[in-house]
Structure formats: structure tokens, C-alpha cells
Amino acid sequence: MRKKLTASIFLSKGKAVQGYHNLQVLSEDPVALALKYSEYHADELLISDMSDHDEEREKHLDLIKEICEKVQVPVIGSCLVKKMEDVKKLLYAGCKKAMLTYIDQVEEELTKEVSLKFGKEKIIVAVLNTKFFLSHSEFLETYVSEVLYLGKKDFREAYALSPIPVTAWLSDVSLDKLIETLAQENVCGAAGEMINQSIKEIDSLKMLLNSNGIPMSALDAAICFEEFKKNSDGMVPVIVQDYKTDQVLMLAYMNKEAYEKTLSTGKMTYWSRSRDELWVKGDTSGHYQYVKSLTADCDKDTILAKVSQTGAACHTGEYSCFFNKIMEKEDAKTTNPLKVFEDVFAVIMDRKLHPKEGSYTNYLFDKGVDKILKKLGEEATEIVIAAKNPNANEIKYEISDFLYHMMVLMAEKGVTWEEIVEELAKR
Image 1 (cartoon, rainbow, N blue to C red):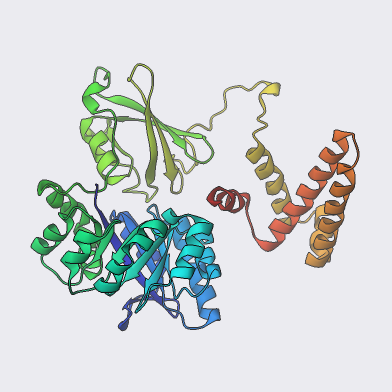
Image 2: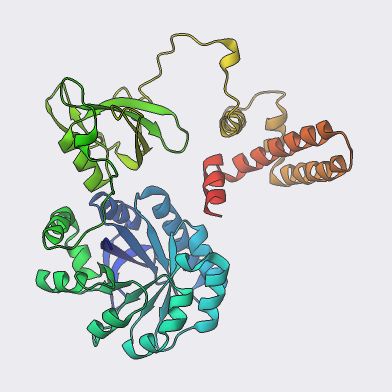
């Protein structure tokens, strides 16, 4: 089992504080703090919402959503969960998992309900008491994927007897204690003050743990660099694509050092032939490329990398290096559905920003959201009517009208297709 190091952020009044029992402000900008933890290569983030009223909770959910959108590591969301809706909001904000905290009892009904609804792989629990934790081990094994153990007593018993993976919460402990804890079979990782305090040295810490026989989280490679067919310089070309759109971004080269650095950090790293040095894409510009997948071609002489691109890939400021069009046939226009949606939406947004006289789109914007909603409702009704008609063309036309008016509403409310697609992907 590969182990993980989890950084944690506690939200109070829109700020990041030290913890539940220490409200000293750690950062005025929780999103920036989360990005820092992500860029220092924490394996995941635990975000705890400490709000005590609905208005503050909604503000914190917006912060959690922004964090999930911007960081390149999984996020676990936690709040004072009282009902299924609380878990739903955390997951819909983008959290990979939601955490329920057991103070003095196991919330069996709620845990079972959210586990059956969202899947046990989405649910973890935090526990304080070893005795009732172990007395409910069969229940937890059925409905929960992981336990965050907060107790300070009998922790070895909890680690040893837990039927599911345990993340250990560690305060100011020694390196020897960290090694001892992570070496235990059922312990899948560590979180707490020690990890936050060591965040700047987390890569070195992972290397040290690896050297002590504790396998740390990293990108597993099915092909070692020696298996590739290298060019005359001993390197392998890498074609880089945006993992969401498949747009080709750039071409670069890797030697063994760059390949292994990419695997260990999750950031695309190349060998600069002009500077004759290792090159972490983004170290100068901030435009990092985070690895989503690496695939070798049939001859193992080229790598296709799909990445999450921050900012522009090209040094010119263009998103892709491939922007100098040489030629294009008239029938080569793409009909990629998302591209079509984005192109139409871009025209609608342009009308919103630069009104055009006589434009129906501007007429809708001028009349306001009530008019847009009225038209949307009318078009939905037209779809229902068209669906009763045996001619499939009619429903095609009505759905197109509906989608247009829906995009006007999206533009009015500041919602993008990327957000819609991401939301659908979560479901």
C-alpha cells in the first residue's frame, strides 16, 4: 500500500485558522494556502468547514469549490454533517470524499444513508475513541472507505485492528514516530500539524520515508525509461495534450532524469536542449502542467502526455504552441459537440459584453432574467409537444432552440460549459 501525506486547512469566518481549538489566523486567503500545499506536493487536502451558521457555511462552500477547481490534488471536505444534504454539497463542490466526524457515537443511520447514496468510496469518518471505533468495525467496513483517527490513546490498537485503511492524525511528533506510524500495515497515511509544518520539505520527507521502506504516493509507471527507444541525444519526444479538450499544446523532450522527476512530482518535467538542463514547465512562468496520463506509442519511441495546463503552454502567451495555421480544407471544421457549444456560447458572451443593435440575444439580456426564463419554459414545452410528433426533425429543432436559450441563461448567471461538464462528470 502506497502511503500519503495529507495537508489540512480549517475554515473559520472565511479565513484559514490553526485548528478547531486554535482560531489564530494562518492565512487570509485559504485558496492561496491550498494552492501552496498542492504545489509543494501534498498528496491530498483535508478542508474542514468550522462554520456555525448557514451564511458562513455557504461562503465556505464557495471557497471549497474554488479550491477543488484550482488545486491538482484530491480534496476531502468536512463540516458538521447533520444530514445527507451536507454531504451532497461537499461532493457537488468538487470534493473527492466527504468526511463525517464521530464525537461520542457512531452515526449509523446517516452513515449508511450517504454511503448507499454516493458510494462508500466517497465516505470517510473521523473518530476520537478507539473503543467504540473498534466495536463498530464491521459496520464501518461495510459503509466507509477510510478512517481518520484523531485519538491519542490506544492508537496502536486502532491501527492494528481496523478493518479499513486508517490515516493517522499527528501533532508535533518526531520523524521516528512518523516512520513507526506509517510502517504499520493498516495505516494508509498521515495528516495533522506535523504534515502542515513540514510542507516545504515534503518531497525530501517522502524520499526519506521511501528509503526507510515506506512506499510513498507517486505516479506508477508500467514502463521504465530504459525500455524507450531514444533519439541520438538519448531522449524521447513528448507530445503534450490538454486532458479535457485533447488540444495539442506543445512538443518537448525527456531524458531519464526528467522522466523520473515527472513521475515523482506529478509535474511535467523536460530536458531543455537549448539550455542543457532540467526544466520543470512552469517554474519560471507559473504555467505548470500537471500529469493526468502518460502513454507510449507502439514503438515506444514517443510519449503522449495528457495534462492539466495552468495558464498558457506557449512562451508567446498563446494557449497552444500550434497556432500558425498553414492550410485548412473547408470541410475540416470540427463538429465536436463541446467545441460547438463553446463557440455558440462565446458568441452569446460577446453579445453580452459588446451589445449589437437588432440582436435577439441582446433583446433577451435587456429584458432580464424573467424574460429569459419565460422563453426557456416555452421552449421546454415545445420539446414536449415535438416529442409527440413522429417526425424526429421537429424535436431536433426545438432542442436546439432550448439549448440556445439555456446558454443565454448561463451567460446571464455566469455559468460556463466547463463548469456544467465538470458537474456532469462528477455524477
